[in-house]
Length: 419
Image 1 (cartoon, rainbow, N blue to C red):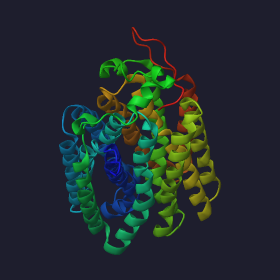
Image 2: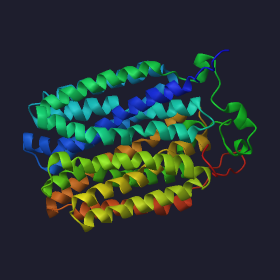
Image 3: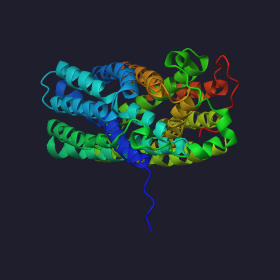
Image 4: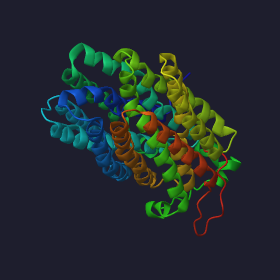
């Protein structure tokens, strides 16, 4: 008897998970390094945060470029090259002597290479899976919270044990080795003489008739629709909230006199909550509840959890906040690419999602810097975190207006379910 072979798409999922963990490492570690970099280079929190803002500005360009590259070229070359650039940027950050060196090494190089790590993986697994698409997107994007769970304590321990510079060298090595997983990637099932997972079953499924997957939109057609820009705005405001919290939460805890290793647990708790949120909300709840209603729930309770952070300075409250914030934040993340694929098809999804991802970059440019600036003016994080809660409520409100896009020659579609 022959054993049934594992569908190659699951190897794509495993490799993508590793690569997105690397992407999360870059996100979460900066918040831990920030207070030490501020002290090392004697700069304000707004200036320190601006390094992350520059990285995000470059990331906006590289996300769009990365989306186009993965639609046209071998993803192994594209992703591995991006990982090498990131690793070099982090390594050079450990050699920086002046603050402007960090703008080049971390802001420019890391931002340039990072653009292909997340977007490429989401686009690829969308091509490999028709059935269980939302599930596999949820699995690979769990790499971000998994990284948060690991990265914050690891970064704090590396800094306390070896110093800021050697910690950066070690992270650069971890990134380079992890990037080797890109060699597993393939552009489409056809490259392995396969069909997308569940394709035949989905064609017999009534829900298949409610998708646009067999009628792909061109990238510019999709970007021109009001539906695209509505979801773009929701993604932007949602990540304004997330990035303000993630970049400044460790600093907030340090200001309260919490030891660094213990303080790193709160951002790590966000990662822990996110793991369960992606499984419960995006992978399971979307099977029985309309995605836009799930988005409303996610954004409403994500924003509301911030008031727990503002209400008390107890350590247990930081950890509880982290779990709740991560749980509801993470539920929304896989829904957006799943809806984009359902609304606009998969032919140009890399380019579409690459441009869509610039909303994250703009949020990353503005959010942490604004929060740092307001803190420098007021001497406290109360108003930055209150603003973060407001941004989440805006996204919750906008979720009521999501509707399928209209294309000439296509019937109106329903967004019940995301795959």
